[in-house]
Amino acid sequence: METVTDVDDAEVLARSRADPERFAVLFERYFTPLHMYVARRLGGAASDDVAAETFLIAFRERNRFDPARGSVRAWLYGIATNQIRGHHRAEERGYRAHARAAAEPVYTSDEERADSRILAGAARDALVAALADLSPGDRDALLLIVWGELSHDETAAALGIPVGTVGSRMHRARRRLRAALNDFDPTNQR
Image (cartoon, rainbow, N blue to C red; front, side, top):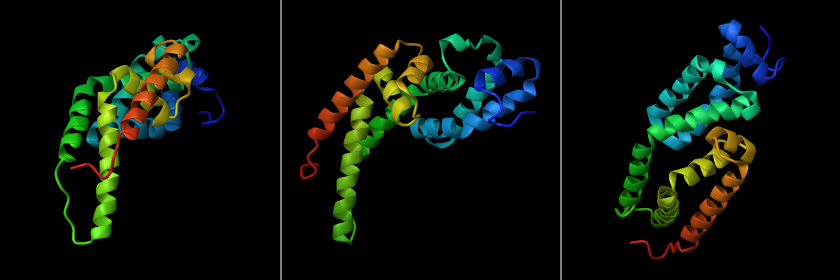
């Protein structure tokens, strides 16, 4: 079996059609970064399930991969994003619950540390609330680029949309996040 760097991804995938064990090369290359991306999106045990399910789907569907539509990496992230969409309602509920929980006061005896924690928590809460307010498409594009570290081209392939649409979604997402954080006043949070 070839090493991780011997053969490009599309060739490994093509060869895995006749020799399924070769698919392990793609798993070794991409499981950890894909799992990290999914964990940032979903957290907890759901990320383990979604990352594993992504590779199971990719293995089952490996005959349907079309290299003309993008890279294997983008294809895998597209599968993961579709799986995340299945968890989207829970993800959005989590964002909103987190924002509601931020309204609860935090008490500690160490006043300076408490102040910095409150300010950091308030900034995080403002960002989480702003993420929850993004459309699912804008949020997917933003998080694939920021957390998944995909390029615009790879994000377009992963989502099955034109590259220009990725740019539009990123512009909208950045504008909304910037506005939410510019309106953030750490002295007026409770």
